[in-house]
Length: 297
Ligand SMILES: [Zn+2]
Image (cartoon, rainbow, N blue to C red; front, side):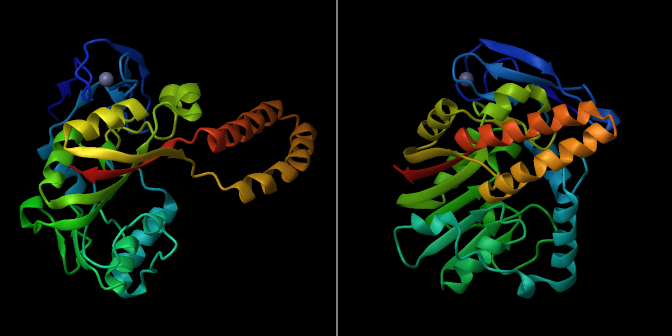
């Protein structure tokens, strides 16, 4: 596979980039082939070599293991989607996007709808919906494989967990921008490079997963990226996948688990549990994801 070595920050173009560490991977062909890099100017993190977007598109279309770090839960959901189709997909009426969407009905365009839960919610609310999804098992009315097939003048666009996967996020946002109405809202999420998990775990952070994730954004690199692609930032916030209720439950289980570890003389395990718990606690303070609301200028 042809890879391009990245010699300056892909977002702010600064030459002052630093190698953090080589990235281990369970797939032999990419184990230690990539380094985790950091821009000293905007704190954007990225992997040291990128494949072209054409190669990435092919990998996603065939659902290659190189770009799909799917958990067992995700694999099961995908199987269900293929077997039962769209009718069994549950809508997501409590999705945070609905707290911010400023019109009641219009044209919605989702980049990377995946298993189409949010997409279905907008459809049920009576919106005109379009989606861009490279993975070929997602077949549905309005879902297209190529951006050229997407109609213009969309009011609302979402791209959740998309920009970390593409070669050039600024170009991707510029292309999306052309498909939107003036003052249209864009909603984005992606991994947060200045979170505690990112800064403490470095290349061992679960988000660092070549060739699936190429980019990890800071608040500063997010602002630069949106400004360069024709958007104003309305809101930018970190958030965490950690559930407070589950964390509290785990906290009360800890003494019993420690006792079990002590009986088995497994002191390494005790240490690992403390680290894991502390990291999840820190993640609630400075979460390892960013959510962004922008407005087309
Ligand atoms: Zn930079």
